[in-house]
Image (cartoon, rainbow, N blue to C red; front, top):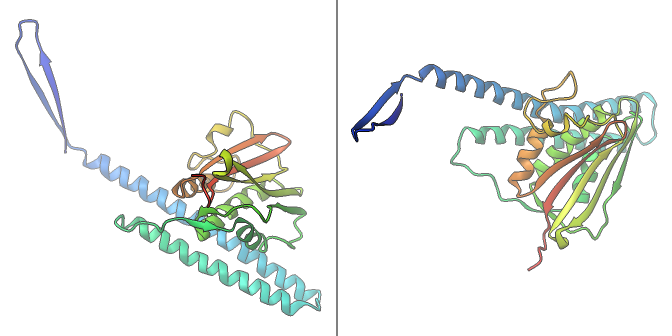
Length: 259
């Protein structure tokens, strides 16, 4: 039930209170149905992302076997390791969504993470796929570590890579670059592509759940990216120019913040 009170006043000084009671059972039931629908879409989206690298690894193995590659054993070991890692990430995703049902449990605190290591590990699943996409990493070894959660950072990078790959249907370049901001207080990790770009009128909506510039997909990718990055104490913004490309800026707290 919803209780509403409204005070009444009159010119003669008298007054009173109007009390309204409203049955909102159906309203709450509808809200729950919508919440469960949103949760189902998010679960489907999160599960789909690890399946893509698994598929790429299997395709790579099949192609290497058909070509009778002399280094097939090394390729097998590398790709099997990647597949097992993605299976572990599926388990992490399942546990993360399980935590939504138990609000008393809190996520682990973010820790300093080696950005170059996580980027290289994530890109290992995509390189050599013959997609016509070039991957460039411009991360200096002196770049300080940044606060994040390793599993969630991989999830963020896969989301951004999938968006960038979708924008590069005819091939192109995806570039990772870091730089310092705020006097060294922040590490900026940029993920840029040379794709079709996003129109200026649509750019303010890219973080909205279920919004997408493509006809396929759930439109939850960037919404999830923002949720995760903000949970580490960071920020995420997007710049884009049609016909030139799109850059996603991840602003992460540096390990050694100035006193």
